Image (tube, rainbow, N blue to C red; front, side):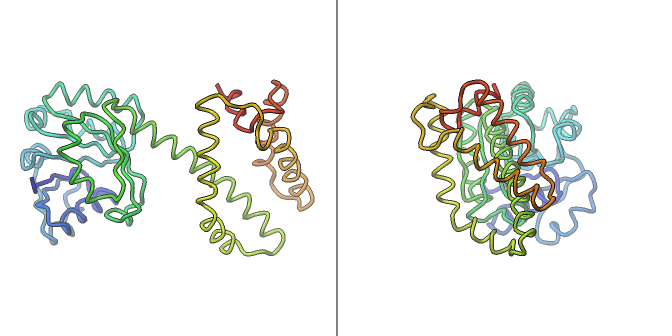
Length: 287
């Protein structure tokens, strides 16, 4: 099975199509703005005039567009319904768990097997060993598409037939990532206030990332098994560091929104009686 269809040729969809071509796949493409396909057609892709025609060209179709609303605008038309029957649809558009559940039902109704995927990579990383695509959905369909997805990403974890899983894992990952961004950006202001290099700090963080990963792995086990007692470092002890962040921001007349947010969260947990428990007990105040 060497034919794949790609619907949507934005930055990510274009990178997907190009990578498949480079790996020897016969790639059929469709995009609402046909001129966006010019460069990929020059490299060997076949452009069709309709989405239905593109889907009929391959057993496996990948759709990667801006959102699920756009996805339905492309797919939820009569000729596409007929074209999907007996084929596999891989949805790589970023969406919510509920959107994944609804689209699986929709796809199955029209005779298509469905895999929901979430890309944890930039377009320039597609095809590289560090790219990840979280997946969930039909196990039989996943076995069919795994070689194709393996061309696009070095890591393709499959989270089972609960189709919402990939989207939930993706949103959890993005929550962690965006939280890390905020911490790093506040750290940048601390460094700037003392004339220190931010790029050197970034390199240091990259170097210690395995250690950070181990800490988070431990905290995940604490939360999963509710083992908050007898911590290595209590929430009350961690509150001392939050106080220092607030003090430093005051000393340098810096924006203090990030440490203030932490302070409020920590105070809430301590007032709830979790001060001598593991810092992961913060999650109890978020339930």
